[in-house]
Amino acid sequence: RPLRRALYGRERQFGSEHADTLASAAALAEALGRTGNAVAAEALLSRVYDALLRLHGPMNEAVVESALQLARLQLQMRELEGARAHFQAALQGTLASKGEDHADAEAIEVELAEVKALQAKGRGQCGDAGANHA
Image (tube, rainbow, N blue to C red; front, side, top):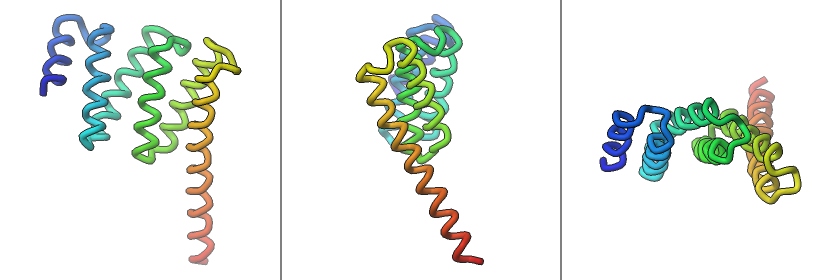
């Protein structure tokens, strides 16, 4: 409740795309995710990410962090397409701003590879299931 009230107060005072409002929204989304309300958390994080991307562009550190937060939540929810897209966006922003040899880029590549492996495994299981029904 306090985080939700803080978010609404900041939206009224500063507007929906002010840095303080977006930080409050991200904090509320994190709390929602921890309490099992992943769907609401994802919707809020998507709003934060879209606003940050629009305001700052893809190479901004806050945009990259927001993409990572959203990707990790989507991975947890097994929304693999969304997770892959947001890990990829975070990787591209990191590569452009920090270079391919930076530890952050390497860490994101590991997370992206995990998503790709899960997607490949899912496709293999679907293919196997279809073959068994023939």
